[in-house]
Length: 256
Length: 273
Image (cartoon, rainbow over all chains, first blue to last red; front, side):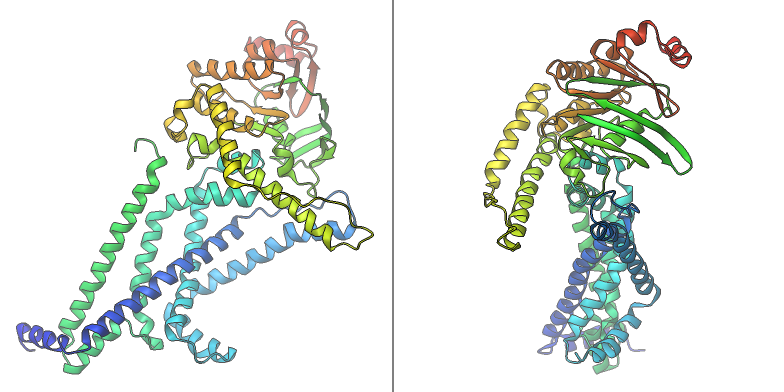
């Protein structure tokens, strides 16, 4: 093995070549784009699934009215929630049961060609897969958060004539999010790091850029170390951000 | 005003309410008392369908509100409810707690009217009714109005200075007064109280009962589940004594406390008085 100093020198030389910095920038941008959009859409998907799963399933038929109206109302208040619930269970099972790499590959090389969409940008593909994947995980986090909110909050909202959905959106979910914020931060950090597999479908992310730098000189030690440091810095940055958000959300708590 | 017909409620195999039929008139102050586990809270919670009855009907302003077809939210706007554990929205300030439902109601009612108007337009000319186009609501004005109303209510309960505080910083008695103000903000026709003073420190019971007395004097229809016998005697116009899911006595406070008819009531009174 060459002297470490020499390796660092080689790496710096490689790094100062024109275009390399731009490559790193692009890699960083791709990584963060996929993680951030994946996370945001993941929250949307996760919240949707969580709400469907905690939805009350009222197995009651209206007493009066035309038969068709009664049956329709029964379908709306019982059959549809039940079906959606089973679908969500299946969804979560599939996405938690397979590795993210497998999901990426299947989506890119099986689902897209079957749909006749072979020319979709691979970053978009990665965002979609990461959103669906983290949606499955976030749905369980969010469900736990919703269940952790005192059921009295829902009763309070319903008692003044607000609908289930409105109370959920305005009262329960904000409190649930506050409770699960540290866990959500965790999920985002995990997501940022998991994006390092997107090169499987050809996305130029941080990993692929540094592998490229290493490959030109066959010296991987320093590039990979630098890559590790970049990941750590990103994660630390997120940690601070989550802490700040938590502080601002905790203002309704006792003894602020 | 509220009519309950053959109401049954069971939780699994446990039958909590057995064949309850009762009529509550406007302006009455009905106090429901009885030993714990007698079904009084469940009875109260059935009145606004917080618990869905197993069978039976509850009529409120002429409609059977146990029918899933009926828009229960619309009826609940007119039936306030005060809980043992306050159930104030923890993520909202006192002012927001009180303003939230009125603003929601204004928006929702506009949407409902617009829907009726649009559906009417889809009908054939013969069947079409004359419905005026609903006036678009001015959100700012609606907000300002409900804010003024909320501040007025806060003043009435003596907590103007707590308008921007969060519920977690209030004492139990203050929370319960805010909860009462929150239900008053909807101008309800009746308020249901579910053991409003049971979770309070003894010192704070007084302030809440005082507010309830004031409401009673102003003619509010009230249904109160409580263990405060003094309140029942002083404010109530009618006593329902419940045990094991049935109403055993339905009489005036004077009559009930002076000569209870059933042995169960005699036994209960000998323990609590």
